[in-house]
Image (cartoon, rainbow, N blue to C red; front, side):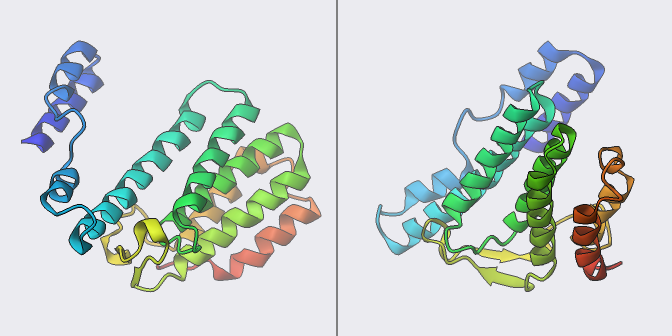
Length: 213
């Protein structure tokens, strides 16, 4: 039912009928998810309650990262404020995954750092651009090297299991090759392609780009 409501809302939005799209969207529950309801089933402080809470924190964190990131991508903000938004999302990831057990969030860390690098290139700050580009590609490599399954160890998500088979993507290559493809074609990089700092970073990571995951 909710999938159908979501589709109807999206179709009306695509047609430009925003009031009708909002009407369908409002038929969703206001702020309670299945995860929340399951959490309420168990006694607070019990082992099963902790398991549910940590799973819900994991899900909420992923959604919040995307929302903060989208503020920087789609809102008409100065480059400095876009960078601030991206860094807020990075800080959130580091707060939740304080053991460095990023799991899927290596993907987010890759994207966020590369977006920041782009902004610094546009601003002519190549020192910071190099720093963030290096970080972004490092996280892409770490994402590609994830095991098929892992359990998080950080306190707020401890025990939550991440499995790479559950991730859907529109490309068959690994993440590093996907990101390098965008960098190879991105106009923002045209002015720095011959600079030593840029070529050294790209050459460092290109050997790890693979046609399959």
